[in-house]
Amino acid sequence: MSDWQSNRKQSAPAAEEPLRVVSLFTGCGGLDLGFEAAGCETIAAVDNDFEACKTLRHNRPEWNVFEGDICDYNPSMRGVDIVIGGPPCQGFSSAGKGDPNDPRNFLWKEYMRVVERLKPRAMVLENVSALTHKKNGDHLTGIMSGLEAQGYQFAYGVLNAADFGVPQARRRLVVIGLREGKPSLPEPTHARKHVTVRDAIADIDGEFDEDWSHTPPKHAAHVAERWSELGPGETDPNYRRARLDPDKPATTIRAGGGYGPKGNHLAGFHPPIHPFQPRQLTVREAARLQSFPDTWILKGSKTAQGRQIGNAVPVKLAEAIAHQVVGLLRAAEGRIAANEEATA
Ligand SMILES: C[S@@+](CC[C@H](N)C(=O)[O-])C[C@H]1O[C@@H](n2cnc3c(N)ncnc32)[C@H](O)[C@@H]1O
Image (tube, protein in one colour):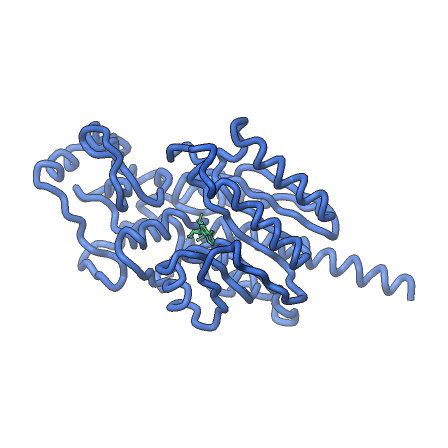
């Protein structure tokens, strides 16, 4: 496993109990893998996509996966340290049609309802940066006033995954809420030296492997021929798809959709064009660009796998967020212990 990919549980503090995480809108678990790497334990995961749940159960059979609508999720466990989750973003996203009345736009209210039930010490909410746009302002204000009403202080901002060692430019809104003190966002670790597409996928040549989500895409000969002539970063005008520049982080990997030659919207997985070959990326290559470990097996159809990967929080970004939150919670524990000692 390369340095820029996530290593499981690499920094779990040996002497401390793992912090307990409830994960909402878990998808294929990008955010969770980051928290796991920071020494946390996922005690429940919720998603209504059966193929994403299949991926979770395959890779982490020990996780308690609730497969269903979050509206029907009424947990009552105690001692939850952190609630994490990225509510659906299609309605906010500048990549989608952005329908303000899309019912998925309001699922953050379900996230806040679960936070209110579980009263975790901290919460992390991730979403597209477009949630900070004026037209989506009521949602962000709603989240912030909900947190205040529940006694959380919070910090929020847009982070670029590339600044955290992810070989991809991907800007995401991150909100961290904390009951015990004032939170802050993680500082970039790789702002001066980004990991590139070449670093991430150049070694994946050779055999295609369906079980590893590395299946050969089918393109018409004339399309492949046109793509073979594209330079790094150049866009194919017909399909509006760019060829990746091997010496930069990738452009944002999206969950699905793309454009046909007449500007028509296409269903399915339509990632960028490979930097060295005249074909689109495979799901595995896209997973690498999302900094998923090679051992994370994706389940479901190719479209479903692409959706899971394109929807995910890059694991390396998740890891930076998780380390920040764990650090804040451990510091708060230290302050409480010191106060108790002083007053004993
Ligand atoms: C942006 S993705 C989350 C990705 C995840 N945070 C990760 O890092 O892999 C949003 C997820 O919400 C799920 N979802 C959408 N509506 C839902 C609902 N009503 N109840 C439960 N899950 C839902 C989708 O299936 C999708 O997996």
